[in-house]
Length: 274
Ligand code: ARG
Image 1 (cartoon, rainbow, N blue to C red):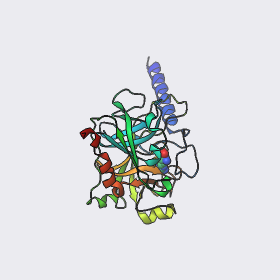
Image 2 (image 1 turned 90 degrees about the vertical axis):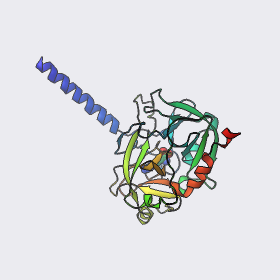
Image 3 (image 1 turned 60 degrees about the horizontal axis):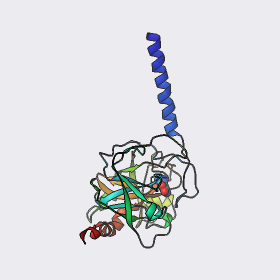
Image 4 (image 1 turned 120 degrees about the vertical axis):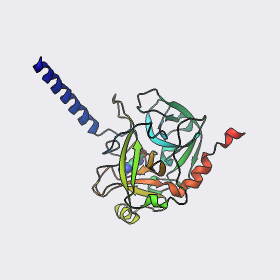
């Protein structure tokens, strides 16, 4: 009996160890989206942990019409989602779905909503050149609490060392049956001078970097378009990086404060008024 229990414990331990190992294995990219030096095989949000959609009700993800998750997004009003411009361009508008209020990709909680309009920051061409922001207008209202956008007095949120939280579902594993859940990681804001030495094309107006000097914690492919928040204020949108979580190569995010007025203007549910 005791021996049996011990063996069960051992089996459970081995299963847990195998699961942990599987969770840390790299996942093949389904699409090489812009900004990365080369398409490569990378893990999902790196160095983070599971997060609750209850704590981050504004975190959403984007799928194609077959339900394949390809990017993240963030509710900025009851009818609007901010995401990366390179995400908004990845799938035809008529095929794009926003999944809100859902913890697990395999779940059925929350809602799946169509997109009736896409606004992309004028001047966007490539994440590495900045302007990587878009606003999706939903074809109906959702009831999940939107994120706050930074105001004029929120400049300090971008101070070097500010701890920010990045959220995402990572990408869909090619052929993988594994359930994937919302994940989060905490990354400190990196100074403009430091990020300039990491990336020669870093632009302090349109981008902000976050990560540790030694790497280890980062967003990754499939997290693009998702939120980087301080408290419940959106300071960044996952945009690009050189690989993921590499030393000296922080994640690069769209600097939301630069685009906040525009995002706000695009988020008003005008069409619902007439
Ligand atoms: N471009 C990627 C995407 O489309 C996001 C890459 C973020 N990389 C990083 N190291 N933080 O999902």
